[in-house]
Length: 109
Length: 117
Image (cartoon, rainbow over the protein chains, first blue to last red):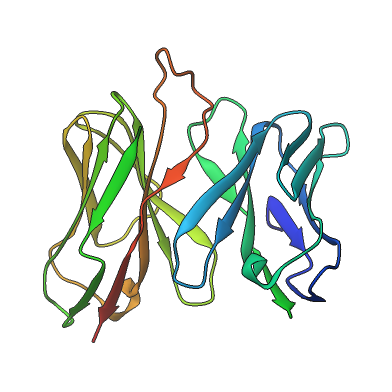
Protein backbone atom coordinates (compact mmCIF):
# COMPACT_ATOMS: atom_id res chain seq x y z
CA UNK A 1 0.00 0.00 0.00
CA UNK A 2 1.30 3.44 -0.91
CA UNK A 3 2.12 5.73 1.97
CA UNK A 4 0.36 8.60 0.16
CA UNK A 5 -2.96 8.02 -1.58
CA UNK A 6 -4.79 10.56 -3.68
CA UNK A 7 -8.35 10.58 -4.93
CA UNK A 8 -9.77 10.82 -7.43
CA UNK A 9 -7.17 9.71 -9.96
CA UNK A 10 -8.91 11.65 -12.72
CA UNK A 11 -11.39 14.50 -12.43
CA UNK A 12 -13.32 16.33 -15.13
CA UNK A 13 -15.24 19.48 -14.28
CA UNK A 14 -17.08 22.29 -15.99
CA UNK A 15 -15.76 25.80 -15.74
CA UNK A 16 -16.96 27.47 -12.55
CA UNK A 17 -17.37 24.29 -10.53
CA UNK A 18 -15.94 23.84 -7.03
CA UNK A 19 -13.29 21.12 -7.01
CA UNK A 20 -11.92 18.99 -4.22
CA UNK A 21 -8.90 16.69 -4.41
CA UNK A 22 -8.13 14.46 -1.46
CA UNK A 23 -4.89 13.11 -0.02
CA UNK A 24 -4.50 10.54 2.74
CA UNK A 25 -1.24 9.38 4.23
CA UNK A 26 -0.24 6.64 6.60
CA UNK A 27 3.00 7.92 8.13
CA UNK A 28 3.98 10.60 10.61
CA UNK A 29 4.81 13.77 8.79
CA UNK A 30 6.41 17.14 9.42
CA UNK A 31 4.79 18.82 6.42
CA UNK A 32 2.52 18.18 3.47
CA UNK A 33 2.98 19.73 0.04
CA UNK A 34 0.55 20.32 -2.79
CA UNK A 35 2.19 20.61 -6.20
CA UNK A 36 0.83 21.43 -9.65
CA UNK A 37 2.29 19.86 -12.78
CA UNK A 38 1.38 21.46 -16.07
CA UNK A 39 1.09 19.47 -19.32
CA UNK A 40 4.59 20.56 -20.33
CA UNK A 41 5.97 18.89 -17.20
CA UNK A 42 6.95 21.87 -15.08
CA UNK A 43 6.07 21.56 -11.40
CA UNK A 44 5.02 24.44 -9.19
CA UNK A 45 4.72 24.32 -5.42
CA UNK A 46 1.25 25.47 -4.41
CA UNK A 47 1.24 24.98 -0.67
CA UNK A 48 3.29 23.60 2.17
CA UNK A 49 1.36 23.11 5.37
CA UNK A 50 1.69 21.31 8.66
CA UNK A 51 -1.60 22.30 10.27
CA UNK A 52 -4.84 24.11 9.63
CA UNK A 53 -5.60 25.83 6.38
CA UNK A 54 -3.92 28.00 3.76
CA UNK A 55 -5.48 30.08 0.99
CA UNK A 56 -3.96 31.55 -2.13
CA UNK A 57 -6.34 33.13 -4.59
CA UNK A 58 -8.90 30.51 -5.61
CA UNK A 59 -6.92 27.69 -4.03
CA UNK A 60 -7.45 26.45 -0.50
CA UNK A 61 -5.53 23.66 1.23
CA UNK A 62 -6.51 22.07 4.50
CA UNK A 63 -4.92 19.41 6.63
CA UNK A 64 -6.19 17.30 9.52
CA UNK A 65 -3.18 15.85 11.29
CA UNK A 66 -5.23 13.54 13.53
CA UNK A 67 -7.03 12.01 10.55
CA UNK A 68 -3.92 12.09 8.33
CA UNK A 69 -5.85 13.73 5.56
CA UNK A 70 -5.52 16.83 3.41
CA UNK A 71 -7.73 18.41 0.79
CA UNK A 72 -7.05 20.84 -2.01
CA UNK A 73 -10.01 22.95 -3.08
CA UNK A 74 -10.34 25.09 -6.19
CA UNK A 75 -13.16 27.59 -6.26
CA UNK A 76 -14.63 28.91 -9.52
CA UNK A 77 -12.52 26.50 -11.59
CA UNK A 78 -11.14 27.62 -14.92
CA UNK A 79 -9.71 25.71 -17.91
CA UNK A 80 -6.26 27.04 -17.02
CA UNK A 81 -6.51 25.03 -13.79
CA UNK A 82 -6.23 21.87 -15.88
CA UNK A 83 -3.13 20.08 -14.63
CA UNK A 84 -1.98 17.19 -12.49
CA UNK A 85 -2.13 17.95 -8.79
CA UNK A 86 0.32 16.05 -6.62
CA UNK A 87 0.27 15.55 -2.87
CA UNK A 88 3.60 14.88 -1.16
CA UNK A 89 4.52 14.42 2.47
CA UNK A 90 7.76 14.95 4.31
CA UNK A 91 8.19 12.22 6.87
CA UNK A 92 9.16 13.40 10.31
CA UNK A 93 12.92 13.86 10.58
CA UNK A 94 13.50 13.20 6.89
CA UNK A 95 14.86 15.36 4.11
CA UNK A 96 12.81 13.48 1.52
CA UNK A 97 9.32 13.78 0.10
CA UNK A 98 7.00 10.85 -0.54
CA UNK A 99 4.67 11.51 -3.45
CA UNK A 100 1.15 10.51 -4.31
CA UNK A 101 0.44 9.42 -7.86
CA UNK A 102 -1.35 12.63 -8.71
CA UNK A 103 -4.84 13.69 -9.71
CA UNK A 104 -5.36 14.71 -13.31
CA UNK A 105 -7.83 17.60 -13.45
CA UNK A 106 -9.48 18.69 -16.68
CA UNK A 107 -11.70 21.77 -16.59
CA UNK A 108 -13.84 22.19 -19.68
CA UNK A 109 -15.08 25.61 -20.83
CA UNK B 1 15.16 35.69 -5.72
CA UNK B 2 16.03 32.05 -6.10
CA UNK B 3 16.21 30.39 -9.52
CA UNK B 4 16.88 26.83 -10.53
CA UNK B 5 18.23 25.90 -13.96
CA UNK B 6 18.37 22.59 -15.72
CA UNK B 7 19.84 21.68 -19.06
CA UNK B 8 19.34 20.41 -21.58
CA UNK B 9 15.56 20.71 -21.83
CA UNK B 10 15.25 17.67 -24.10
CA UNK B 11 17.68 14.93 -24.99
CA UNK B 12 17.58 11.91 -27.27
CA UNK B 13 20.34 9.38 -26.67
CA UNK B 14 21.10 5.89 -27.96
CA UNK B 15 21.20 2.91 -25.61
CA UNK B 16 24.67 2.50 -24.14
CA UNK B 17 25.67 6.14 -24.48
CA UNK B 18 26.72 8.27 -21.48
CA UNK B 19 24.56 10.90 -19.81
CA UNK B 20 25.21 14.13 -17.98
CA UNK B 21 22.39 16.37 -16.77
CA UNK B 22 23.21 19.53 -14.90
CA UNK B 23 21.26 21.51 -12.36
CA UNK B 24 22.28 24.81 -10.80
CA UNK B 25 20.58 26.96 -8.21
CA UNK B 26 20.95 30.70 -7.84
CA UNK B 27 20.08 33.02 -5.00
CA UNK B 28 20.52 30.66 -2.08
CA UNK B 29 23.30 28.93 -0.24
CA UNK B 30 23.63 25.46 1.23
CA UNK B 31 20.43 24.14 -0.36
CA UNK B 32 19.30 20.54 -0.16
CA UNK B 33 19.26 19.28 -3.75
CA UNK B 34 17.22 16.47 -5.26
CA UNK B 35 17.02 14.50 -8.51
CA UNK B 36 13.66 12.96 -9.41
CA UNK B 37 12.52 10.90 -12.35
CA UNK B 38 9.01 10.66 -13.70
CA UNK B 39 8.48 7.80 -16.12
CA UNK B 40 5.62 8.04 -18.59
CA UNK B 41 2.32 7.75 -16.72
CA UNK B 42 4.04 7.29 -13.39
CA UNK B 43 4.54 9.38 -10.27
CA UNK B 44 7.69 11.13 -9.15
CA UNK B 45 10.50 8.88 -7.96
CA UNK B 46 13.35 10.23 -5.86
CA UNK B 47 16.71 9.18 -7.28
CA UNK B 48 19.29 11.10 -5.26
CA UNK B 49 19.45 13.86 -2.72
CA UNK B 50 22.29 15.90 -1.28
CA UNK B 51 22.54 17.98 1.87
CA UNK B 52 25.99 19.36 1.06
CA UNK B 53 29.00 19.32 -1.26
CA UNK B 54 30.14 15.79 -1.90
CA UNK B 55 27.28 14.31 0.15
CA UNK B 56 25.03 12.12 -1.97
CA UNK B 57 22.29 9.75 -0.83
CA UNK B 58 21.02 7.23 -3.34
CA UNK B 59 17.44 6.07 -3.12
CA UNK B 60 17.20 3.61 -5.97
CA UNK B 61 20.04 1.28 -7.03
CA UNK B 62 20.51 1.64 -10.77
CA UNK B 63 23.00 2.65 -13.40
CA UNK B 64 22.74 6.34 -12.53
CA UNK B 65 25.00 8.36 -10.27
CA UNK B 66 24.98 11.90 -8.91
CA UNK B 67 27.64 14.36 -7.87
CA UNK B 68 27.68 17.72 -6.17
CA UNK B 69 30.98 19.38 -7.02
CA UNK B 70 29.86 22.83 -5.85
CA UNK B 71 27.32 24.08 -3.32
CA UNK B 72 24.73 24.99 -5.93
CA UNK B 73 25.50 22.46 -8.65
CA UNK B 74 24.03 18.97 -8.88
CA UNK B 75 24.89 16.60 -11.71
CA UNK B 76 23.16 13.37 -12.75
CA UNK B 77 25.25 10.95 -14.78
CA UNK B 78 25.29 7.56 -16.37
CA UNK B 79 28.07 5.64 -18.08
CA UNK B 80 25.69 3.55 -20.21
CA UNK B 81 22.04 4.45 -20.69
CA UNK B 82 19.30 1.83 -20.71
CA UNK B 83 15.92 2.04 -22.45
CA UNK B 84 14.34 2.14 -18.98
CA UNK B 85 16.19 5.38 -18.23
CA UNK B 86 13.78 7.28 -20.48
CA UNK B 87 11.68 9.77 -18.57
CA UNK B 88 11.33 13.28 -17.29
CA UNK B 89 14.13 14.28 -14.91
CA UNK B 90 13.52 17.01 -12.40
CA UNK B 91 15.95 18.76 -10.12
CA UNK B 92 14.63 20.43 -6.99
CA UNK B 93 15.90 22.32 -3.97
CA UNK B 94 14.84 23.25 -0.48
CA UNK B 95 16.46 25.49 2.08
CA UNK B 96 19.23 23.70 3.92
CA UNK B 97 19.35 22.88 7.59
CA UNK B 98 20.80 26.23 8.58
CA UNK B 99 19.00 29.51 8.94
CA UNK B 100 16.37 28.60 6.35
CA UNK B 101 15.14 25.72 8.45
CA UNK B 102 14.73 22.11 7.40
CA UNK B 103 11.19 22.10 6.19
CA UNK B 104 10.91 24.70 3.50
CA UNK B 105 8.97 24.36 0.33
CA UNK B 106 10.48 22.34 -2.46
CA UNK B 107 11.15 24.24 -5.69
CA UNK B 108 11.50 22.40 -8.97
CA UNK B 109 13.52 23.08 -12.07
CA UNK B 110 11.97 23.02 -15.56
CA UNK B 111 13.02 19.42 -16.15
CA UNK B 112 14.85 17.45 -18.84
CA UNK B 113 12.91 15.08 -21.05
CA UNK B 114 15.20 12.15 -21.88
CA UNK B 115 14.40 9.62 -24.57
CA UNK B 116 16.66 6.61 -24.88
CA UNK B 117 16.36 4.81 -28.23
